[in-house]
Image (cartoon, rainbow over all chains, first blue to last red; front, side, top):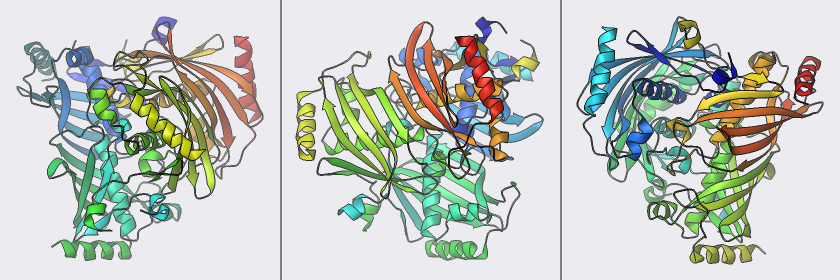
Length: 152
Length: 152
Length: 152
Length: 152
C-alpha cells in the first residue's frame, strides 16, 4: 500500500447488490463485560449506511446543509446472536429493502468471518430540518432501484 | 436540597409497576443533525434498566464479578417517533414484560412531557462469562414477578 | 422524593464557589479493561460544565440557535490518578479559573468519595457558528466573576 | 481493490518513525454544534495508538487476557486548533516520545490535509489488572526504541 492509500480512510463498496464495509473493534466499542456494548452495533451499521450512500453518489453533509433533508432512523429491529470482542475484524453487509417515497429500508448483518453476530432491519426516513417527512430526491431513488436490481 | 443529596447521583424508582428514570440531553448525545443520535437512546434506556435492577436489589457488578452472570441484550426493536434535542429533559418509563428462565423482556418508553419520543421492546438474556445462557437466580425472578404484579 | 422530583433529572449546584455535579457510572462508560474509558471522563466533565452554565442562567441551546455563540474546548489537560469502575458514584467539582474576553478556564476534579480520580484544566472558547472567536456576553462574564469571587 | 481487501478493515503503518492512521468522521462523532465532539478526538487517537501497537507486533487483547498488563492513559494534554466536521477525512500522525520503564509518551496530531486540527501528548502507563504500575515487557520496549530511532 502506497502512502496515497495509507492516508485515505477505508471505503466500502458494493459486490453485486450487497454493500461491504469492514471495521475493527477498538476499546471505545467494548464494555466492562468484555464485549461490544449493544448500542455500538448501531454506530457500526450507521457507518456502513453512510458509506453506502457515499458510494451511490449521495453527499449527506451537502444535502443537509442545502436543505435537501437528512435521514433519521424511524424504526429498527436487531437480533444480537453472538458477541464481538476487542480487536475483532467485522464486516457489515447491507442490502436495500423496500424503497418508499420518503423512507428506505436497509437490511444489515454484522459478520465475523462466516458467523452472523447481529442482524438488523432499519427504516431510515428523510426529514426536513424541522423534522417533517420529505420525499426522497428522484436521483436518489433511482440509484437505490438500480442497486437493488443488481441484488435480485 | 442539602449537600448530601447534591452529592448523590440521580436514582429512579417504581411508581406502581412502572420504573421512572429521568435524564437530561447533553452535547455528547446529539449529532450534526441537531438531534439525539439514534444509538444514544439505547444508552439512555440501558441506564434505566440498570437503575431498575439496582432498585430491585440486584447488584450487576457483583453478579458479574462473582460469576453469577451478566445481562446482554439478545433482541431489540425500537420506534423513533420524534427527535430529542440538546438540553431536553427526558423520562424513561420501563415495564417488565415476559419473564423467562434465562431472559427478561422489558418495555421502555422515552418521554418528553406527555410526548412519546421512542418506544422499545428489549429482550435481555443472562449469560455466563463464556457467553452461554444462564438461568436467572430465583431471587431475581421473584423480584421481577412481584414488581410485575403491581403493574397488572 | 415525590413524583415531581422523580421525574426531573439531576441538577447540580454551587457550594461556595465550587459547582457540584454527581453521576453514576453505567456500562456505556466502561471498556473491556473493566474501567471507565479515558475519553468518557471528558463526557462527564462536559455534563458538569453544561450544568454549571445552566445554574448561572446561561441557556447554551438558545445561545447557539440565536447566534450568540457556542463554547468549544480549545485546550485541555487531564491527569488520570485512579480508575472509576462500573456502578461507581462520582462527583465532579468545578471551579472557575481565568476569565478572558473570549474564553473561560475551568478546573475540574472527578471524585469518588474523598479520592481524586482525575483532575483537569479546560479552556473553553466562545465561537461563532463559523468557528471564529467571539467576545463573551457581558452578563455571562459578570455571572462568572460573581461566582468566582465566592470561591476566593 | 479485490474483495480480500474490501473485507479487511483499514490498517495504519509507519512511514519513517511516524505512524499514519486515516479515518472518516461519521454522524456518531459530531454534536449539535455541527462539529466533532471534543471527547471523540480521544477515541480517534486511541484507535491510532492501538493500531500502532498492532503494527509493532503487540497484541493488547492477548496481553490483557494473559495478565501481561493493559495500557491506561495517565496523562493527556490536547490543543484543539480547528474543528473537524461530518464526512471529513482525517489522518492521525503518532510519534513515540519518552520511553519509561512502566510508561510510554506518544505525540499525536489530528490532520485534515495539511491543517493540524488538534495535537496531543499522551502518557500511557502499563497496569496490572489490579491497577498497579507494571514494567513494560523487554520486547515491547525494544520495538519502541527501534521505531523511535527511525524517526530521529
